[in-house]
Amino acid sequence: MDVIIMQLALFVLSLFLGVELITKVPPTLHTPLMSGTNAISGITLVGAVLAAGTGQASTLVHALGFIAVVMATLNVVGGYLVTNRMLGMFKRKD
Image 1 (tube, rainbow, N blue to C red):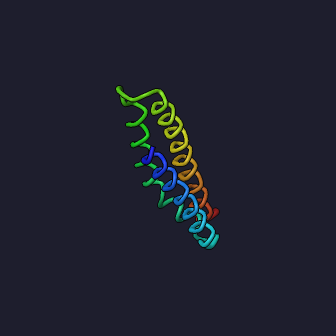
Image 2: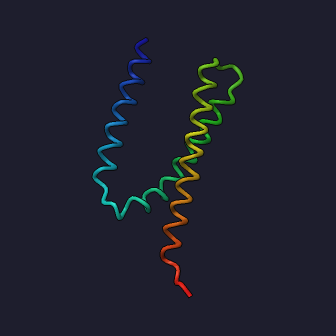
Image 3: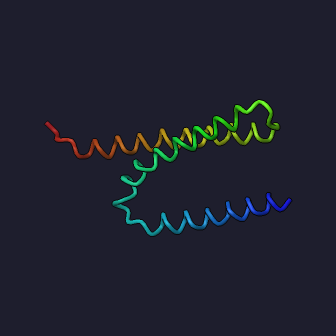
């Protein structure tokens, strides 16, 4: 039970830290930072696939792993789409 409370506290702390960090970043830096964090989301995706595919885990672990795979995939794809759009803004129009 203590492990669950510690993990929940860590999750809540990371939420507050994430919100504080994102709100302090100027809007002009959001897109470049998003493209840089795609690598981190890719690592999250690999971890989520490993968690979802573990053969000896409980149903809860499989369900949470599947949700993590879906969310990390959306984050990676969305980040690349936004980065592509941002880079398209810098192309010369003929």
